[in-house]
Length: 163
Image 1 (cartoon, rainbow, N blue to C red):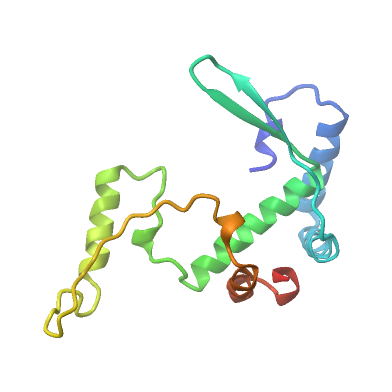
Image 2 (image 1 turned 90 degrees about the horizontal axis):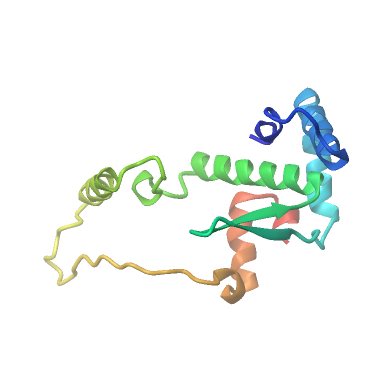
């Protein structure tokens, strides 16, 4: 995915050439790239700033982010690694994860099918009931307890990275 942005460009500036070189080096030597990324994540506690500019299309604003090439590669690696670990450990059932490619009726069908397949979901002999709750999680990163976040991350990533 990182290389796709450079496929159509005929001329690259210095920063783009540097980024493309790092990406190609990561493709050629994946073990070395992973070692560098892990070392980068373990040793660097303060991450670089991300610049943002908005392109005004009159109907909407489109954000354009600018960040250092090594940060982009590290972010892409971390994104894929967390997705992989989440899939391997079955952290989220399929009916919890909506995708942009799925039309809403299919998502609703999968959700209903997932609920109906739960064991004794409709059993109310002891006075229990089934409740569906909808919630918006806004600014969770500002409100979350750091101890809880650390414990959650330890389930997925290396303990050194979770700290």
